[in-house]
Length: 331
Image (cartoon, rainbow, N blue to C red; front, side):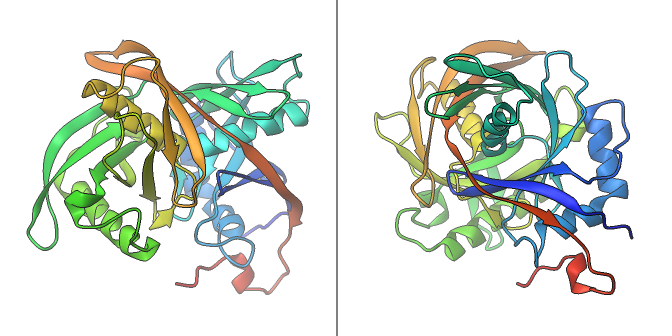
């Protein structure tokens, strides 16, 4: 397999890494962003492992591959990658990418706020960057709850009620007390195991369909929450996605999914801001911007705000004969 020298810029948003791949990738074929996603999955997946896995990355690494945009209002387009494959939306990554696009001159800097259009596999996401502070706010694609109080049988035979909501990707949402865990006091390993069990059970028992595209109709992960959303205080969650990957940030697309569900439940009104905390105490602030219809499905758009920071730049290379250098995960 061919391993070119690949240049990256590393950032993090709320503690969650994002490795922006800027130069060195082979040409990516495809008319649409979803075509490009299929192409890298089928032909260039060895480069995902090369960059995301050890010894250059780790099990929790996250990547953003810049590709040519197709949508007229997009300033750039991106394919997201992680330890299992390629996701359809990533809020923490678009927050970082918007700041990067302005700093690199891809988008001209405006006096106070600069808007960046980012074409994602789930659709166009617009991000406003405050030039003075560097903070960014994105407005989601249409988000909606797919199932509310869906009965799911766990491995031990217990039936629990799970919500499934879309915020650019589909997530199973379940309160910690329902699973017998405590998000404030239990360790990450216990919370991760509980979330993974829910994910596997939902995948086996629930059909998930997106009204616009079959490529979007899959469960990305599970978010375990506290029970505080909608009662005037911050709420904490942990998102476990892909292959048991734990998000250090509150999860931008997950926050979007939670807001769509809470709005449908009457817990959060349009324009009401909610603060979401992660397992490392980083925070995103979100509110419902407007309501709309996605076919017959009632949906909302959600604004999510956060801050991204630079951590480094690198050129990664492959030394011929280095089998481990192709990428591995140590579990």
